[in-house]
Length: 270
Image 1 (spheres, rainbow, N blue to C red):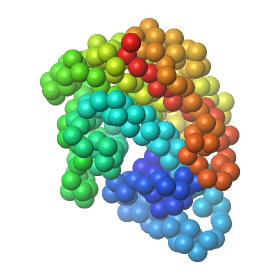
Image 2 (image 1 turned 30 degrees about the horizontal axis):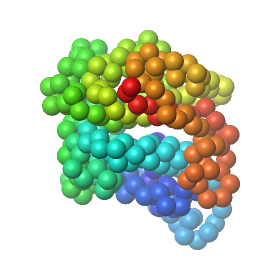
Image 3 (image 1 turned 180 degrees about the vertical axis):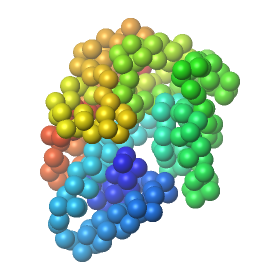
């Protein structure tokens, strides 16, 4: 669903007019590609339908979230960071689309099955801009520290960590223990970008996520997240929500209400 929303945004289906992620469609199923083609036709002909409105809503969410994280990543690279670790990388395409990552090393951390699916599609992508290292890990049997050490991550140099679309599915205890593991491998000046959720009031959304096998397990206020980050040795630089993202990146009026629970905190290792 996330990849499909990014693909819709890539073809102009969101209010983020300059959003581009050509990697997204590579991972779509045949059904997903047909859905995308129908949306493209609606955009081309200028027909406003319920199908397009729904596609645009999810595309806005993903385009705004992605653009905000991209901006924080670019800022970290501009400060000299050349290592990027993406936790729960899934079908992330940054190493293939962000020219700023030339000369950087990107570590994609995820479950072996997810990475196997992604790697089976790599031939359809252009050559990666960054040097990509896949780090398969089963968190029930291996620590993040051990997996990254084995993969060649250098904890003595600053790292930009991206934790997107994952925290809400983890218990508070797991989130805090993961933050501690991140801190162990974060040199001074490292950046941590965390996408998290405040209270999700919609019982329907919670039910859908549970049916999909991804029940919501934690929510955080900005104050609670800042406290957890400080406990791990990170100072919050900024903490923003969808309204802030829309003002920065969108053109026109964006319906931010359904995404009001989404936030992104950017923090640095003290």
